[in-house]
Amino acid sequence: MTSHTLKQLPLLCLLSLFLTTGALAQWSPTATQAIPLANATSLGALSGSTPVHIGVVLQIRNRNNLVQLVRNMNDPASTVYGTELEPSQFISSYGPTTAQVSAVTRYLQSQGLTNIQAENNNLIVQADGTAAQVNAAFNTQLQRFLQNGRTVFTNTKPAQVPASLSGIAVAVLGLTNAGIMHTPVRAAGGVPTYPNTSYDPPGLWKAYDVGSTPTGSATPIAIFAEGDVTKVVSDFKTSRNLLGLPVPPVTVINAGIPNPDTSGAVEWNLDTQASVGMAGNVSRLYMYVASSMTDTDLTYTFNKFVAQKLAKAGNGSFGLCEVFPFLDGNMLADDNIFLEAAAQGQNVFFSTGDTGSFCAVAAGANGVPAGVPFVEAPAASTYAIAVGGTTLLTNSDGSYNDELAWYAGGGGISQFEGAGYWQSPAVLSTNLNSRGLPDISMDADPFSGFNTYYSCASDVDSTAACTPAWFAIGGTSLSSPLAEGVWARLQSAHKNKLGFAAPKLYRGSALATSTAPLGFHDVIVGANGLYSATPGWDYTTGLGTPDVSLLNSLIH
Image (cartoon, rainbow, N blue to C red):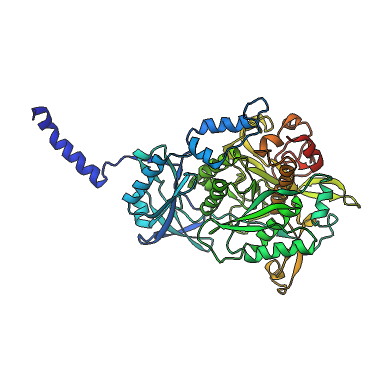
């Protein structure tokens, strides 16, 4: 043994000791940042024995290549125009590798986490542990808070991973349960007299000029929901029978532990009946059901929808102020999931919210212009279709007359998401290519709302008896499933080969902010707070609302 080696031995032993104890462990940052809860009172550290379910988000492989592929798939000059990936093709070329999943799995095992399971597309590895194990595994700190009457927990330090997982594990989900998606459905309290009526499916078909466009009977679609949807499915089937419309098969897929909660039934009834109602019919309706309305549990639900690729479109009539999923890592996860969806020819439609040009900042804030002018996620995602709202006016014979931007319809400029290449020419140059919302709009005003069936009227009106009733329901919770229904018709008309919707909708003169978008009613009256409707694309109604027959003749 040389003297050189002898001189290094004490240092090597000391280094080994430090690495063993973690004193010199090398950590790498992730997209999951500390969450500074507003209007919250600290209750101290989360007990170390508290069970915590987490999800490690893995980065898409060759992501820039996948972004370019989606562009080529929508370029008529490209050799891959009109094609789409199957989940197996995504995994082989763009999904995280088996070796990367194994590296994450081994690390979680080494930290004592159990029930480790990778999603089919390898984008998320889920696991169970205690708060103490999670704190140690991700060099973070979980604390309890009292916020708006709820006891919640969140991470007060950013989540990190070992340097060996840098660039592989890019976010850690489940470190907070404070981010709750809200479902701001609005009931008009019965059939309204303003503007002139509420609408059943045939009324909307005439108003939006369905004409000879076929129904969506060749296209499977999905609804993202939460809790126990047994009664929702029953009400959906009953509504179809009462209207004399075909009843498509319904499949319920739980994306997590089943939850007996039925508080979302008002929303899910609207989503199922409005989407299939506007479509006329679909080949199958899937309901992807989350364990809760946290943004993390809904991310798991979106991922199952994409990894399975059973439906061509999915709808989520809910949202959360975009700053929260940006901080907790769900925005990064959702962006990757929706990018895979675009490459697979699947589309996700999301409501832009009912708080105008401001995002809701607390429970009960819906409809009140409060809070900083963020927009809502997941609608803000570049690869989602954001759907805003209008007030629909029809003539005495039910034909289209005009629309106004609905005063509470969400819209504005994302502070975190960029505009896709298809939208870049439409957004104002002063916005530095930021994502603009909405993309399109449809009827949302509850006083021109959708007649929705409930077997128990007290679900909507707590003063009513539990007897069957129809209610006029509105909000962007209506406009989004209506848009999904239109897309189902267009897909069926084109043999389910339309692929990613956004580049198809933004095309030709639709890209000019001063020119009426092709295939759309250009809404030029109304405002949602900071923004007013103008000719061409705008931050209140996007491209406008579809003239279905005309759009069907133009789209390809």
